[in-house]
Length: 593
Ligand SMILES: [Cu+2]
Image (cartoon, rainbow, N blue to C red; front, side, top):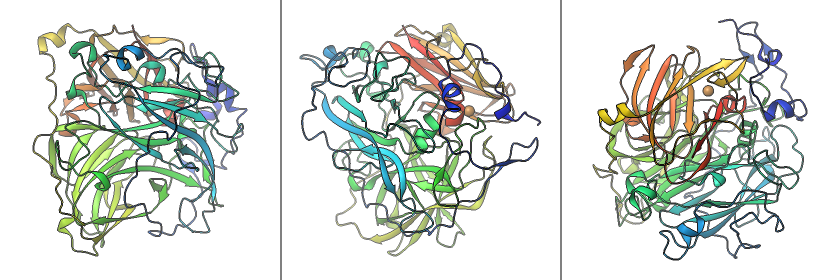
């Protein structure tokens, strides 16, 4: 398929307020020396330097961030505290009603995260080909930013007030831009705390939807189930989320800022998914509840991470990261583990398998959740699970069946040679993580995977569904960039304004046959009603029959999604979570009114 050179072909967009177009030429991005094969959309990049595999060990457990050790100063306020250094956000919605006396949630627990440069991150242990180098990450209560940032363990019914400070350098060297807007994907969060793309800030700069710059922004994460208006109290427990992540969402700069390291994990628990092996579902918990964040990156001949933020085609990495490290090792006990798998992209899809040392066979595992939401019933004996950028899946692996000393690998068997889409599954795949079964657990494994996890709210009847408004969104190329319904992201212009409390059907279509778009709808979980390819219905895989927030819209595919719009008003986004497509404007604003 012949397509123009995208750098030379930025046609005038309709109604565009795109920040990256304005900033791109001024950004100090070191453009890679790349060759383009004429008409073939293939970037020929030098390979990353040789790695030293399986040398660096991941921590045995993921230690969650503790609440801020001291009361936040200045004290959080309903309206932005500009005099105290806060950027110019609008007032927290429903804050006093939800957290005040008699409210369902109680006083928020205070947390603090600081976006900061870590000047000497090591991607591959002591390997001299990968020198200590600057990354951007989040710092918790102890000095030093990491990528991923600290994991937050939240609980339904206990709101969080998280102060996010921006202490990044005033000027970026390399790619990225030092303003931040942090989105907690996909918490049921009032819009002013949702990390809107126009809400980016630094001490010196402000996004178009903020009133002023600042050193910090307070985010109100209510940790309430969706449905508080309909059900009262803390909402509908069938709407519980579980495995979330926070990441930068700055307009036009999300890909480079996330690549540079601005993301972290957020687990949320409740009575059912209790975080304990003594109560609720008794899923593997504590040290045995472990996040694994997958991504790909590319490094230059000096071993420094690179990214071409101007290229709307995107870039694939040739090194896989797990929790910010290339080819690390995780030592596990002989018992059940819950691994929370996440793909932070920017573009590559993964399909992950548990493989033996010889690379000759794979072992099945149990899938318990998708997009962070527990499935109604576990899917046992799965050999592999595919995750597009921003998709999450929790799996349970029982290492009790392996003798001590067993070495295993998590491998990606999904071949993807271009940024367009994944191709096919080919064994033995690329090894991303080595797992060594090196000890018996100090206590008996009390965890289980029950046959029933979390019930789903029934869908409306077909008759009710037939009465709902249908909105159609077409994901397509436009002028060498990426558009929805022919338009690029406009930070001020809502493309849809559903009424609060209503339900609608959103139809997501990809008219192109070359690309796959993992489309993310903020704020509300949806249910896939149907999928068609070129008009022909295709089956909805069991893993996609629960609640989702990312919908992979494949070639010539239309996905119909049932959505509700509940509890808060204001601006939210829908966008392709291929971060390059998102930055090159395949994003829209929608408002709950
Ligand atoms: Cu896309």
